[in-house]
Structures are given as structure tokens and as C-alpha cells.
Image 1 (cartoon, helix red, strand yellow):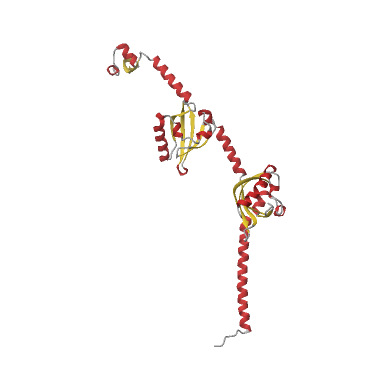
Image 2 (image 1 turned 90 degrees about the horizontal axis):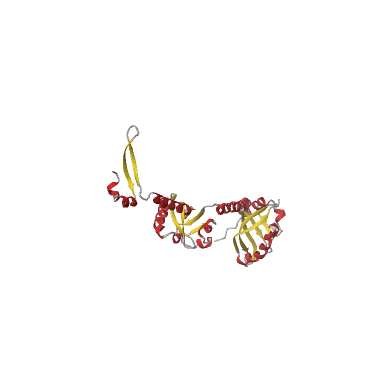
Length: 320
């Protein structure tokens, strides 16, 4: 069987097909590279790559927009040049550790924009290595958290300045966050309170009712109001009036407590004084006729002192 030899025309046609296939493949690669480049430039997070000395190799358009520089003004310069002066040593001291560990997560830096204004960023990064496993470049993305940190600081300031005791607790029975009013009211430091199950601080006589109220609150996912007593560090108890709201999905309770100890003491003193004033008295109600003239009196209640003074029992006289 003789082998078929391609004619010059067949060879030419075959080469043309291969060239056409290569052109299609090349066009596809160009299109894919263009798409990847566009994604790189338009990525929602700023990207930067540094060499082994911490100098810029590349930045994307989002990075340029965030800092206000052009890429030409950045490439080749050291990352520390774009940091606030008091943050530069931190980078220089920690960059070798980054290269050794190979990854950073959520490291914060204060950078300086071209207009001189500061910007706080949170950086995540990894180390890229060549086929021999040696350092090649860093791959880092960062997010501007300036506004987030400002809001967080304002929230913390507000949280601490609220005169009532504000807390976030877990449904597992521990405080997660407390403002400074707790320390002023109960004498424990905030750090101590975060390690004590909050039910351990509740007065023994109030514990079951507190558990029932919290359980009902979690089950109904509704706000609840109640009163109980909390132990001070000196062993005494303070009366608290609570307003609490659950977030069952996160297993949290958000609550505000008000110290009403003085009010409760005043109420008790008033009740004792009232009892002393009524010692030996009886309560009556007056029945009037149609013209508004009193026609009868009826006992509503009598106290023990009245019984002792008169020899009459309450059961025999109330209602007569």
C-alpha cells in the first residue's frame, strides 16, 4: 500500500486551516486578557503589588482613584512613602514578617492621599512565589474603612456616654458588651463583668422570674420590661428596671437597665410611714343619696391595730 503524498495545494490548504485556527485562538486569548484586565482595573477593591523591598510593581485603577495619584507617580516608589509618618516604622518592621509568613488579614494602615488627607485602609495580602518557591511579588487588596471607623468611634462614644446601663448579652448567659455605667453602678470592672454569667449577679429571689422573662422574650422575639436586683461588688443589691429586646438570629439580647434603688427605697419608706399614719384607723366608703347627701358609711378595710383597739375582726366588719 503506497502512502498518499499531499499535493502543494493540499499542503497550502492545511496550513491555512491551522493558521486560521491559531488566529481564532489568539483572538480568544486577546479577548479574555482584555476582559481580565478590565475586571482588574474596575475591581471594587484597590489592588497593589510590591517587590521584595516594598516598592510598587503595579496598582489598579481603583487604587489610583482612592489615593488620587496616577499609576506613573506610584510605580517604583516604596509603600512607606504613602503612609502617614507615624505608621512608616510599623510597615518597615512588619514587612519582613509578611514575607516570611506569606499572608496578612485585616492589617490596618493610615495612608495619605495626594491632597494630603488621611485614609484608613484594611489590607489583606498573600505572597506570590515563582516555580522555585522564591519570593516573586505581593498580591494585596485593601478597603477604605475611614468612614466605618469614624462611625464606630462615634457609636462607642455615644455608648459610653449614655447615663443608663446599656449592654449586649448572649442568650448563652454572658455579657458581650457593656458601657462604663455598669462599673460605676455595680463596682465591678467591665472586664470582670464580661467573665461572670449574668444570672450569678441576680438576687436569688429574683432569679426564676428573670429566667422566665428572658425565656419568654427569646421565644416571642419581642421586647420585655421587668424589675430585678443585681449584686454590687460590696455584696449589697441594687434594684434595676429593664427594657430588653432580642435578636434571636444572632443569639443576642440588647438591653437598657436603670438603677431605681433610691426609688424603691423611697417607696418602701413611704409605705412604712403610711402604715404608721393609719395605725388604729379603718377605711370607709360613703354612700350618697340622689341629692348628694351622705346616707351611710361602709367599712372597706381595717388594719390589725384597729382590730386590737376595738376587739372586732376584719372579717366581721368589712362591708358593714
